[in-house]
Length: 475
Image 1 (spheres, rainbow, N blue to C red):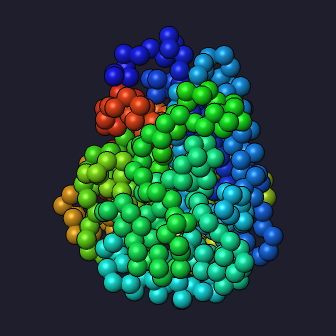
Image 2: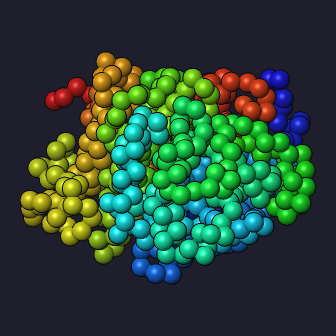
C-alpha cells in the first residue's frame, strides 16, 4: 500500500502523536503527507510532596492525555476526520506500579526524582554484573534510573512492593489503558539496565538483582509494532474512533532522530533543548564499553542507536536570561551575540561546576564583557559540548565522521548557533522544516507500520530541509 497515493484530503484520515516530555506534553495531528495540521501543549501537574521527589498521579496523567487529545482535535476542526493511528514519543525511567486489578499503587515516579540518591553507590553495583555494558548498552546507572527507585520502594514501602503485580513505564501505562496490552518499547526500556538490547528481552541477572518478579514485566516490542485497534471503551473515553490503531512509539530522542531524517548508518542528529543530546544511527551496537555512550535498539533489526547527552545546553542560556532584570526575549539576546567575534574576547564558559553564581560560570569576566559576550560564550560552550558528544559516539570509528549533523530543539532555530556548531565540528549543520520533528518521527513509525513501507522511504518523502550552515575556514 503506497501512502503517497492515498490523498489525505479525500480519505480524511490522519495520525495522532503524543510526545510525553518531562515537563510538557505535546499533542500533534499530521496528515497522510506528513504535514503538521495541529499542535497543542499541556504541562502535566507534577507534584513535589517532599524535597527531591517528583511525581505525577496516574489519574492526572490520563486526564492530561484526554484533555490534550480533545484540544488538538478541536484545533484542526472537521478536517481531521478519523484518526487512523496513534503513536508516542516518550521519556525513559519514569514508572508506576499497579496492583492485581491494574490500579496504581504509586504515582508515576519520574526520572529526575532523587529520593534514591543515598543509595547511589549500592545501585552502581549493578554495573559490575558480568557483561553488563555489553548486554545492556549502558555505560553506567545512577539514582535517576528506575532501578534505583525500585530498590528504594522495596526497602521503604514493602507493603506496596509486595502488592505490585505490574511495572509500567510512562508509555507502557498509556499502552495498557488504550489497548489492554502490557507492552514496552525496546529502546525506552533499554535505558533501564534491565534489558538485553540484542535479544530484545529482559536480562535475567539484572532482573534478579533488583528483585523483580518476571510476571510483573511487560512484553518487550520493537518501535513501530502495530498493536491493533484501541479497546472500544478506551476509544470512547478518549474521543478516538474505534478503527484507530495503536502503534508502539519510542524514546523521544530516537523519535527526534527519525523526524530529522538521521535514519541511515553514520547519520547524526542533535537536539539542543533542556539537555543536549546527540544520536548516531548504526547498523549494530558496539560490543566494547563506550564511556558516556548509551546504546539501544531501533525500529528495525539491522539498526541501532548510539546516544550521548549532557546538561550543557540551552538551559545555560535560560539561566543567563533569568539573571537579567529585564529578562529579554531569547531572540534579542542571540542578536546581541552576532556582533561579537569568535572567542567572545576571552570570555569562556565553565561547565564543570553547574549553574551557580555568575563568576563561577564565567570565570575571568571583565567590565568590557557585554551581554553579547556572555551569550556568545554560551553558544560556543554548548558547541564544544556537542563536539565532545560526537567524538564519544565515534570513539574508535573517527574515520566514519558524519557528513552532516541534523539539528533539532530550540537551539536549531538560531542560525548563529547553527553556524557556530558547524564551524566547531567542521561539518554542515542542517535544519528541517517541521517544527515538531520528535512528533513527526513518531508519526513516521505509525505510517510505516500501517502501510508496510520502509521508514527510510517516508523520511525521503516527508522530511524537507529548510537550511544548511556550512563550516567556515578559520580566519
